[in-house]
Image 1 (cartoon, rainbow, N blue to C red):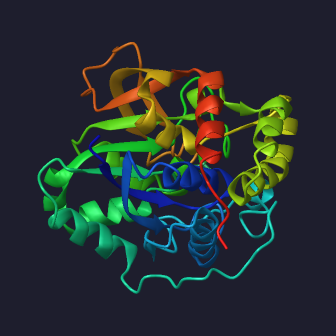
Image 2 (cartoon, helix red, strand yellow; image 1 turned 180 degrees about the vertical axis):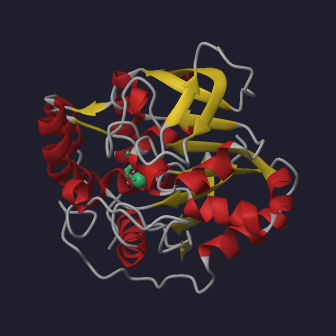
Length: 317
Ligand code: RIB
Ligand code: CA
């Protein structure tokens, strides 16, 4: 089996953290070249720290962690402590990471790694505001030739918005970076709220994770128990949507998802609809079909995968 070289860009965030665990549990399929962090759910000083603590839980000291941009390209930073808690990964004890941050800036890591790579060889997996990716593509557009594809969590169509009436958080925080990414010309697969709101962390699913006897599963269910409280009340459902792990789940088992090639464009002018993703699902315009919009998930299959992969971890002493 050939390993897929990937760069994960994230803003942990409980769902980012669980996605990191899912990726780090799959070394046979995924060669994680690096984890880059960005300001989003909480400020950068916390997202980078959280990513390093999750790396320790996974026992994957081989994976370097980089800090990137502390604010969006144009707009002021908006964070989401009301969802994720003050630390960003409330639900687990905060422990000082064992390994330091890499010295290189995340944007430079992305540029240098892609420049050194073969054509169409690296998969980018962003699951926070797209600031690092937008800055990297702006700094050196020639790196695009070596991007095999981009699998991102962000946007919404029928689901409207989760941070404004018409925009999803990752896109609204940095719509200008998102616009750069959606216009980059490389294959993009988008897991937006329309599909992530189908994969709810119900009590039964959390109990299956709770039954796994290892630190990674205990951390996962601790974070889910906290993370669950906001969205399940807001949406009146039995569990919070597990947004970010849908990206890595798509890489590991794409057959769990269904999508459609269409145009996705980002609003960067109107304050009323800033960050909206206009998804031309029915091809009513002649805009280029720049992304595969994922619209359906096999939620039971998704949690089967998550439980099976979390069960693979052994405790790190
Ligand atoms: O809207 C959900 C997205 O915003 C997820 O990536 C979550 O972690 C936050 O970054
Ligand atoms: Ca995220």
